[in-house]
Image (cartoon, rainbow, N blue to C red):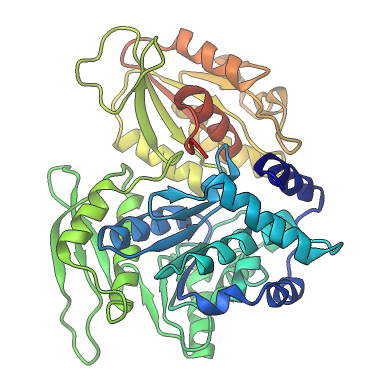
Length: 450
């Protein structure tokens, strides 16, 4: 298959809805030669923050000279974004070749989109002989296609309400699905809160004799005084001691107080693999200084010529201030709200919002809507997208008065730029499908070339 034919074949697999379970994945990977058996890996699950932890690990380990594969989902605009080795995305040629091999191996067997992309990632990383593969869970954990691996460390960032139709209606049930990635004796790094999620994860660790290292208890992150973009990390105590190594004056490239917790989980994970993948202090600092995660609190300025500027320095009238964030569940929206209040400076907030119809629409929207001066509802091209008028009806009357609907993302962004004055902020949020399309329009493709 050509690259376009391979992408088209993969897209057709989306007709097969989400299928949780590992039996078919195990059989399929065995037919492909069990590439995952040749890969040392880290496995990252949780509700929010998975990609940020993975991106921080990728940045630091790549800075230290390791060849690190990173498999993540979903993508923003190109499926190739899901597959990285260091700063390199999978090429169109390699994508087509691996997809062809998988299709031929499948014969006429059915496989889901996510099972297919997971197999692609494992084959590519194994063929490229990476030093480490970082795998992000797609949905849940216990029955997710990535859960065929036995990692060096399992990471569970946090647990909150999301995907209830697949994972369960209570926090305890969702946490049990997330905890399904814990393997016997494999250490676990986590940022779960002190609620049913912690009790569930701790119980799973105890049952499987897997050491649990908890953010705020066994390691921690502390922001530097004065609001500077620096922080301190207090590390895991060596066995048999109570002393912790503290690293001070660490940089952080991304805004949002929660990113300190994500960075701390990355550093705790590195502590647990330091005998096989040691990294130096300089590599940690440089990796943290430059790590980014597109579409998650991604800030930039754009002028009338379409040029992108990373800072407001020398800003002229007509340059619009943008913030893209894929906050798509109540916890993510709450985190975005805190960041808007504490980490960004603007006069008025112009909110461009879309959401998937199968999400908790009301709770997520109402975390952000009261902060906005203008709300523009739109709909990305997806069968799962809620209609703009459907979203508008969720607002109380006083907020509905300051909202409008736009049929397409292009129209919504054009309208937002017209409504935004100098020093206003245009925030695009509510759905990664929306953020992906908006980013494509505003910044171009994240993955370029062949």
